[in-house]
Amino acid sequence: MKNTITILSAVFISILIISCQSPENKAQKRLTDMEQSFIKDTSRVFNKAKASTLLTSYKNFADSFPKNDSVPEYLFKAARLANGLTYTMDAIGCYKKVCDKYPNSKRAPFCLFMQGFIYENNLHSPEMAKKLYEEFMKKYPTNEMAKDVKFALDNLGKSDEDIMNEITHKQKQKKT
Image 1 (cartoon, rainbow, N blue to C red):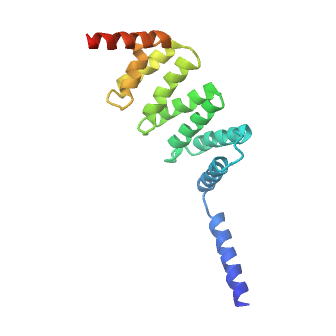
Image 2: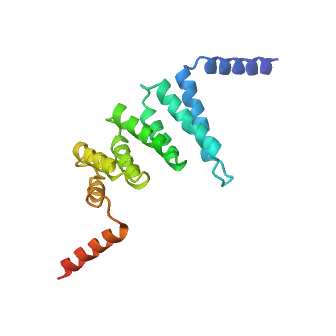
Image 3: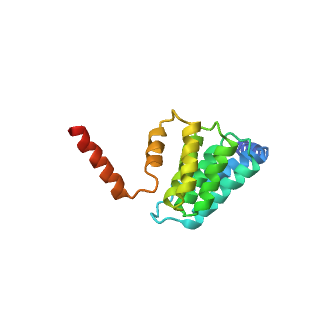
């Protein structure tokens, strides 16, 4: 009898704790569970449906709880997932939202860079890429990625072959 009361008390307390969580905490817990399920999927087959559901959940959480400290990270993850799913404009939208709404986030510089990168490489829009790369250089001139962004700016519109020829030429000049 004593064991039954102890078990019932534990169940009751567990139910009480779960039911007292805020909607925000419940949503965050669901996201964490979805992430774990996605990461631990050992089938070795990319599950597009699961990825799309997780992407939507990240975006819904960000829209529902914009003041939550985890939102920039969730949007960053959503952008990476969208990019992997080849939802290019969705990826850009998530990266842009981090930059616009969470400019002090540690992810903001990379998100700005990625917008330019996608415009340059996926959408073949060097004008838009240039605008975004220049914005990066203005906002984050000392960021660890600034050299990469400068290189991208200097080589916008050039083929890989042209870039390699320039590098080879510069190396030959240094040797003489």
